[in-house]
Image (cartoon, rainbow, N blue to C red; front, side, top):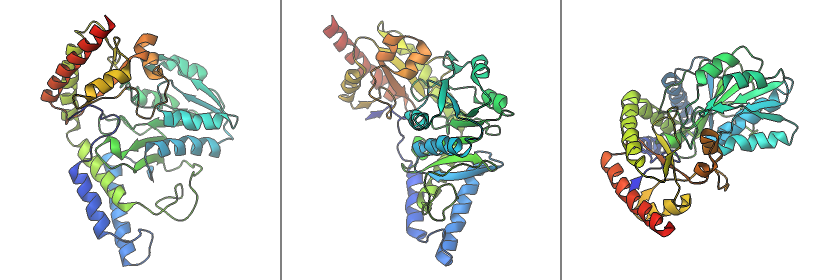
Length: 374
């Protein structure tokens, strides 16, 4: 099997799974219980949370554990907008966001909120346009650090610096950047990410927010790790998230350079094909390579590769059934490219041998569809 869909989800690291299993068996108490078993569990929860803060260099931030990035994004967007309606009901975002951003925004639009989509240049936020559309009643700006389809990495720190003294909140979905690139959190109000993108378990994620920010909870109920998300703390998942984060950040620069080398090699090979367009650009991280194969439908090509036990994706795994990729069109401004796009996502686990076998299978599939078309 050759797995090239790491941006959809990653395989669980055995060390992470071992942590989950050990905590599940050895820490049976509820961290909120007052007896000895509860105190023991609480100590581990505090320790895991402290490690996450240290790893991400968080200073004055609170960690809210969630079920994943979708919940974190919903909590950030609805939580800010519903709690701070006094500022206004205007939201700014981009055409490069995940469906878990558009979903809560769409919900809020039904509640009377208005939305502006900031323009981009080569996928990057146009700072002049952002300055132009920012209003006195803008309550939230939400922009993903890395687009999940094209890999475009935003100038998050520049945007955060600009918004720092503005009367609005800045949320960043870092699901595709945590564990791949370093971004300074200092001027960002809220950050979302999920464990299953960094070789952790599905079902656990984080919303990180500055201590002084108040949000409206989505889940109300009893005591938990925070007043902003009720429910019994999922201690095995929390501990495993801490382990996954530590492992993913180890030798980060070395891993990045390795993936970059793979990306360049793969791109060089794919550029030889007449009916292949490279949609990812110089602003994209090397972990994501989006291309268009113009002589076949994306799903057809995907399933053709699957016959060789090779796994890629078309659009984001959580995207709608729209045949045109909104994100690819935003970056390329080419409808044909957006209609035929597929995503190859790489990892430090990917080998050169795997890419060689991928290219052999790719050539066979390409030729097959080229002959059918002819």
